[in-house]
Image (tube, rainbow over all chains, first blue to last red; front, side, top):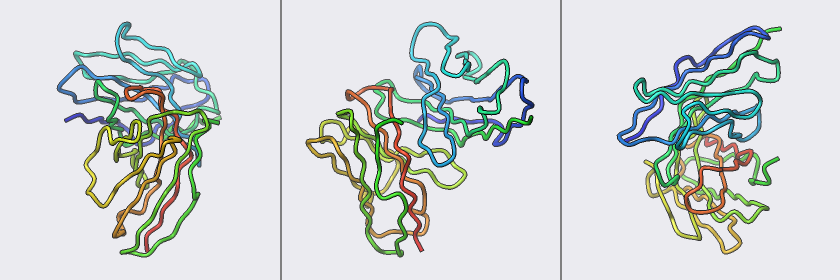
Length: 113
Length: 113
């Protein structure tokens, strides 16, 4: 069975500071990993994904994440937070056929002026 | 805008009743997945349909059922509603039976009293 753990249900950073959102996964097979963002009253939007190849993946809005198999982690980072980054972020893992997705419980990012 | 629409936006039902939620994609995506997102939680995968056949199912009881139509619109049906069914229900569409590129709708907020 696959599962995802997001450490920290709320993270607060100052504008311009580093954003680090943590995600660890549990999977018996090589996973496909994703980060999604959800703004209030909207659906989820794909930020970035790791399927195969380079372990450092870049996404939209300046976000990136690194797949570390030895640590079973896929942490999301952004060098400099912007006010518009305030939202809820979800890490997810899928099976190899992309017909089952498992989401973490989410991390709400607050960006202070 | 993802081009994925869901109806209705909000719904209030009584315990024991049945409910039908709808999802459509303007882009002709032939795969649809449904998720349940309880308050403060991440989305939980219910099932996926590809070309009108169920293609994967999460850990939900049989009273959660679905349909996908030839035009690739979809319905989620929930029988014998329980209080714990109160949640945001999200659909996500994609092209192809095994695609990570999901496009989420804004969701239907179901309240069961």
